[in-house]
Length: 327
Image: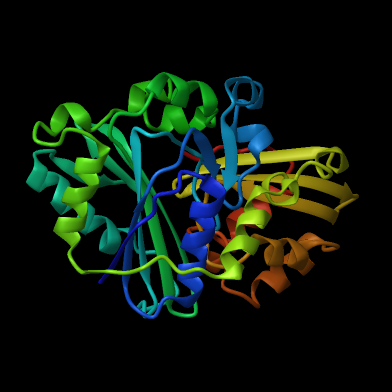
């Protein structure tokens, strides 16, 4: 295992380095890094729906978009981010347990009884201290997660605006009531630097140098661009219908422009996971009737785009007129 500590707190560069290593690393790699006040959204999320943009702008918080799926998370200097990169993964699939287990073991050794719960959360006393996401392609896997050590949970709860159905499904009233910090549970860990030292020691390996490559600069610029952060900006006015459903695997929202019974255009967003670009699925479903869409869905593995989704459920969400919510 190669070890790397990133010292920049620029979210756009940190995410660029992470993506560069995902593309090019030849060894298993473990990174630890921090971002100054930033909300990071999943690759398929709509920031206009998921975030309190007015508060974020007034508070001077940055917005970043990652290449993995899942929901929005808040980073500050009281939070530690970890990344595992495996250039020789077993398969193109989602497997959170394999990469969360070393973190769970390390935190338990330090005194915090952490559990992997649901699809991608680490819990402590029933509250979330870590959200995780993955991206897989060509046998390569990128897994990353947050660790709330001493974050400002008030700012976190103001910045994020999760689906009310998601909160009801978890039987909580607000974001702040379902998250907590690690610090009170780690008596021997004095700050985030000490936490990172302990995590590096638990994972083990050899230190590597940070690569200096123009590709990282290009990815940093892309990550900070308005086109990358807000691709929905020019799209929202095109769609007359919105169909949003909370499934066990996450929320899927579909913006639709219909011409009679035919899909003229659509946009799929949400906090779901997938290993293939959802834009490919959108292109497949454009200009189709229900029967045509069903036939086209038979030509691909839908779970690669929306992990957990079935063709029947997706067709019902697009073409059925009655709104449905699944807990």
